[in-house]
Length: 185
Image (tube, rainbow, N blue to C red; front, side, top):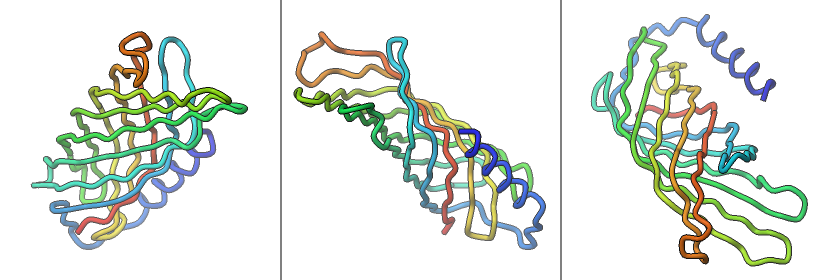
């Protein structure tokens, strides 16, 4: 995680020192991907690993847009057990343009959540549910169409067991701290 933070800070410093000559248009469609640290917390325990994401949306103007965001984990399990988690969120996004290059954003909305456990020599267990998503981040326009961003999203909700009809429901938080890159059309 320390290496990820150092790389992110270095990239933001490089882009902050460069001059973007033309006025960038921050409206319209955008689509991109992200890589980061995904963490699943429930009932006092926590596991984390690499998270992969895809996102896209439409900015109606400089300050308001709608965004869809999906992120999934790699294998979070230890030993013979496999474990994975993911979310899909749809949110309004509110942006404050600091200058033509930098902006900060916040978003809140609804999300679907899933966690899949595959213990060794046991039946797979799927947990699904809905929750609230909150997110904040910083966006930097590298060129007229290319943007990078550093964001943190957290989804809070209840995951219901597929097989146990309420006996194994758990309150869970799935968070993702990620560096993303997107193309603004």
